[in-house]
Image (cartoon, rainbow, N blue to C red; front, side, top):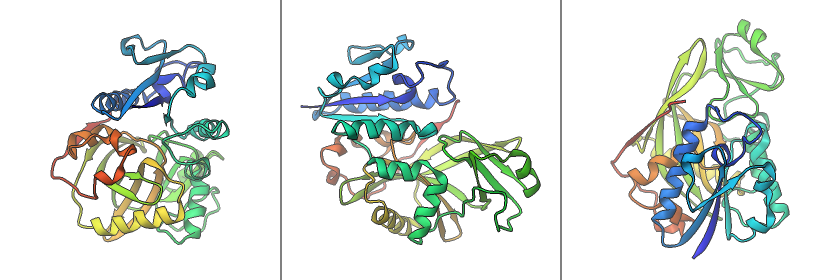
Length: 316
């Protein structure tokens, strides 16, 4: 039986030098609990998981308690596992740095390579790269001197995750809120979705299409919840878009979240999260198979959408 080491950043010790009141804690706990459930039901994998020593209520015989950051980089421990599964937000390039560490030490990992993560983590670099391949990416600027004539704009963190900072603004407000760690995009009035996809080495499986529900409060946009596994009439177009993404980013691997915006029949790529996202929580509950087993054989599930839906509320 293969052994997996799970490193979920928020619960696993990524915040050992900070207060544990992260606004991502709620979804972090959900993701870790769902992964543990998947592993417990698998006959292919054994597992352990890093756990911040302060989260006493989550201790078990499977947890590896972390007291210092160096515990997360213990090579003698890490090399005892067949795979490392990191679930780390792209904020401050933490995911990129950890994956580079694993690659440097030739550790098998269930995640995209560092080159791909670097592109996806930087929203400006991400735009330029996909635009070079003529993919339908939302125009993105790193300066107030953009040539866009949009009446409304979206201002967001250049390196962000989980709606860490997403503001809707007119051109006048941009001058007040803009800083060099932000990017600017024209506001497009459409419907927001996320795609849960498993990428293999030369193919992919679209697992679910998920509708995103947002709230706007004082011009700040926050994710209210997700409806997992919806049907959409542009299903074939979405598959085509994913194929184009894999062609230009062949280093994508494992569970990936792709955020898209649909306006009429147009598909706009918003961002790619090169890691497990919150939607993972709803996968086992909707498509009726153990997602962790995809690591062993992603061919055992086809691009089939079932009728069962699941709603995830964001209680940050």
